[in-house]
Length: 119
Image (cartoon, rainbow, N blue to C red; front, top):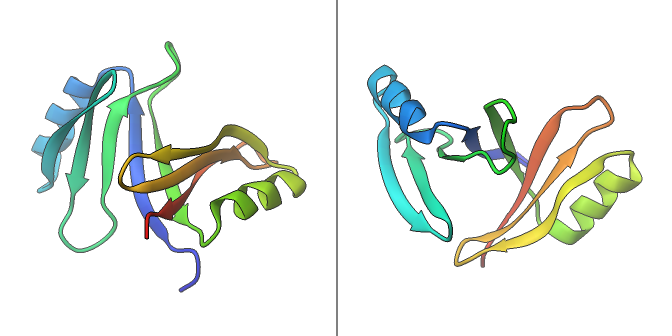
């Protein structure tokens, strides 16, 4: 399938509470990874799309799950989304050792992450 959903990420104001809740609710493997300014919790689900949990980058914003779709060319996909009326919330940025992401808001207001893995 072209452009599959490849990652879902919880942006939350309370990562510790989210970790406790989802750790008790589901049979997920949760692994904390240190990063600049905090911790990223990797969510490993076995079969299926995994994800992560992180402190919401926008103070006071409600917690939300954000889905990421894989693209072959992150610059081109971000530019195409913009040309089709999307807002670019986070422009293309590198995720060290993993790939590149951008976050768009479609014309209906929905947020979506675009992901280009390294390699």
